[in-house]
Length: 92
Image (cartoon, rainbow, N blue to C red; front, side, top):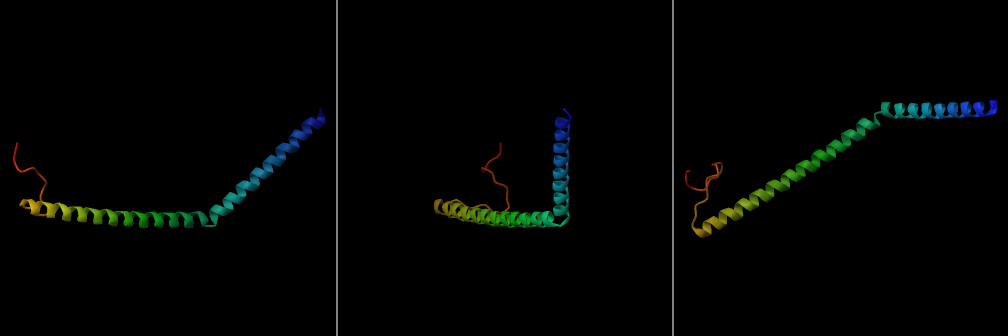
């Protein structure tokens, strides 16, 4: 019976030491600045990706506006002045 209790106690001590060592390792890693550096890098990639997406969306919007304007010109319809509210030509 005493050996069973001693075995469990040793197991608990070993588990505690392993946990403490893991905790110290994580704490050391966090203090090293590696997490912050990685976070800044990922954020920079995200910003670059967002800018690229915005640029692509703006190019698509301008190309679509050109096509719509040309189609209106072909049908004899006058294109609205940029910046005016879109409507359908009459009041309700």
